[in-house]
Each structure stands twice: as structure tokens, then as C-alpha cells.
Image 1 (cartoon, helix red, strand yellow):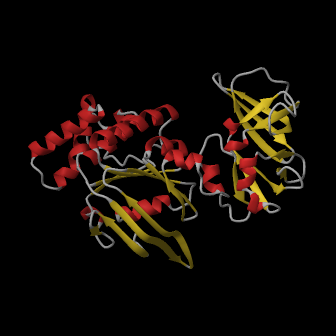
Image 2 (image 1 turned 180 degrees about the vertical axis):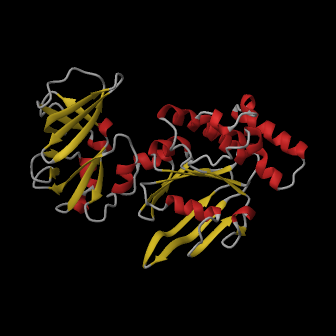
Length: 368
């Protein structure tokens, strides 16, 4: 097994107009660590993974696997295995032949190939399917064969490029558990690319959040959720997404947050106000997660409230999502099941400001 180190890695495409796809990514993945690259489409996460694999050339910087710089090393000599979004199985071969094909190309003995194939099949529950062809398998079974083909090679590093995107929701949950279990058993370095923040949060020891080719934050799932570095990370991590309201902090008595348009304002607790003392009078953005917003009985039923119009209710059985409009701002609340007034009614929202986040409206960086 091996570590992976990226130092100032850039990718520039020269196709008429110069386009920077990845801006100076620096990342250290420890031996045996599971790191997830996550971000919206076009953020550079797959390009970064492909540079690690050697499928994309590197415009600047260095990639090291273990102690070896691999910038100019061909993919087959990097001792990595990659699992793609499409299964890329040979349709004319059986599962057994698909699993052992890469080993056959290495001129391994038939006995050694058979031993490795059997071990991988046992790990992934594929023993009963070894003599079937890919067309006779379900999508989840095909993806397990693709995983098995990587496992039999016993590489230093596993690379995953959105491997679950083609599966239905239930199968994705099942395969997430399968990949997490594999990591625990194999103790191997894994780098995983996805646009699904739920996958990232449930799989990664650490997560790299990317946007427009830049690394926004590298941290543990819990720290990304509780201490987002900027508004982008705060809005991307979490489901439903964090609520945002633009406004200003004003004084002249108790400090208060005044929402843009002046439709509502809330008094700030002393500890929160002290964090925002340097931002008084400046344009800022308040962020608060749906679970920190409640429905209250009236304007004085909680320390911080705002009147709103009830727009939509989604009842999921064990919890309810409330969608409301507070002036110009849309607010989502995640609450326990309860009796609610008709759609269009006036309600009052309570905010737990001790758990709120505040961001500079221009830079997007977190304040305090």
C-alpha cells in the first residue's frame, strides 16, 4: 500500500483558448486512508483523479505514489487500479474470465490466477456467478465484478470515478456499504470521486470539496458540516441544503441581523454578536441548517423569530420538511411530524442562532 501526494497540481487545456481545469491542488493522502473528492459537475474532481491515474497529463506540479514521482510514468506502471462509472466488462467473457484477465496479461500462473479470483469472488459474494456473462447480471452485480477486477490486482491505490452513478437509489446504498466494508478489510488507500455529498459524507475519512477547479476545503465529514470554511462548502454539504439570508448587522441597542429588504430582523445573542463585531454595517450572509429552524407559536415564542408564509409541506413519516418564505428569503425547516396550518398561512420561524454561520457577502469566507 502507499500514500498519494499532490503538490501544486494543475491541468490546463490549450484548445483555442487556454482553460484551467484544475488550479494548484495540493493534497496528501495517507497510506490506507479513504479520501473523497466531491463537488458539482465541472469542478475538476475527475480530472484530478485521472491525473493521479496517468490518464491525463499534468500541466504543472507533481504527483507521488509512495516515494516515487509518477508524472511521466504510464498508467500501467503506477500500480493503481481504477473503477469507472461504466462497468467496462468484456461482454464475451464470463465473470471468472473478467476477474482474471488482467492477471493473465501479467503472465501469472493459472493456479495463482484461480486463487486470486476465488478470493475476490468470496469477498464480494460472487461465487455463484463466476460462470455467468455480464448480460446475465444485475447492475449491482456488474459493479461488484468491476470492483473484483480491481481487487485481484492487489494494487497500491484504488481509484473510483463515480462508480455508483448508474445504479438505482437502493442499490447505491447497498454498494456504499460494500465499498466501506472493503476498505475496512483491505486497509488499502482509496481515492473516490463523486458529485453526491451523501456518498462523500458516509464513505470518506476526509473529504476534498472542489469548485471550479479550486479546492474549497479539506476536512473530516463532521468538520465540513459543523465548520464550513466558506459559503460554498456550507451550501454544498448537507441535505437539505443550508438556508441563506443576506443582510447586515446593526447596532443602536442590541445587535441584530436585518435581512435584506428589511422584511424581518432578529436580535443576536451576545456571544454571536461579539463574533460579528468587525462586520457591523457590512453586507453579510447568515446561514442556518434546516434542523436548526423550528415552527413556533408566535413572535416571542423563541429568542430569534421571523414571520413567514407556509409554501409547501413534505411529510416523510419520521420527519417533516417545511418550505416557507420569509420576505425575499426561502427557508427550509426540518421538524418532527406535527399539525400544521393550511398552505399559504402565516407562520413564525424560530432560529437557533448559536448554531448559525455567518459569511462575508463578497468573499464568501466564514466570519469568526
